[in-house]
Length: 269
Ligand code: ATR
Image 1 (spheres, rainbow, N blue to C red):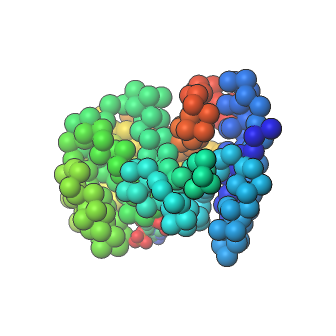
Image 2 (tube, rainbow, N blue to C red):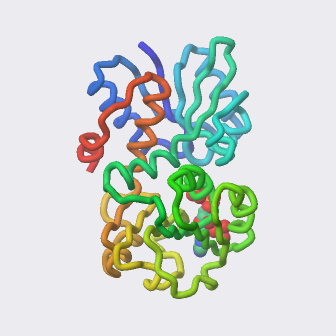
């Protein structure tokens, strides 16, 4: 049976094995998908062993996506822009091929699952770490009117503007520099939610027809989702749909088949 896995640390609570097994039964494929925890110093050896033992595909999660990018012998343009890889496979010569399906997963959830059009909308991205970097090229490809990146450390937002600015109209600011402008789509890519905290921004960023999206998810509403709903967002979404959509894109890369995602999202809820 073909072997697939997700590598991360910690990885015990990963939903990826469940998602891929639901995709497999839906599409009538036989595969094994496990979760492998690796110590940072064993990441490269662990990946090489997985493929040397006949593994067919790996997902990579926190904190290894940047390491996977450096390890890959070649990678897609979207992974190069993200400087992070979440999907690995090997070609016939044993070379490691990397891709990044996070950004397309985010966009498919917002546009496909929630019918929220991104084209010509004003986007506010909160954070400038790996999550935002991974999402940027897919958002830019939707041709938004503008993208503002706000981050605690403005220099990191400026760095993203320098790297992605040739692709779109990007503005980089610190949280304190956000004026009272309202946005159509506000995406939280900070790790603050993990501590139960909100980015320090005013509710004035929420326009009358605004979609707010938290890139993380939890068993109940995240603080950002609650904040968005309490302050009038038309859509207040967490990142569970993005998780399933990025998995579907990885599944399509490996198997050449695109699974249905909505039933999987509702089963996970
Ligand atoms: P990830 O891969 O999850 O994006 P990361 O690359 O460490 O993780 O990025 C975390 C993001 O959350 C960054 O934008 C970080 O802001 P800084 O660049 O200023 O560090 C943001 N973040 C984390 N803790 C924060 C806090 N207490 N207040 C504001 N922003 C915070």
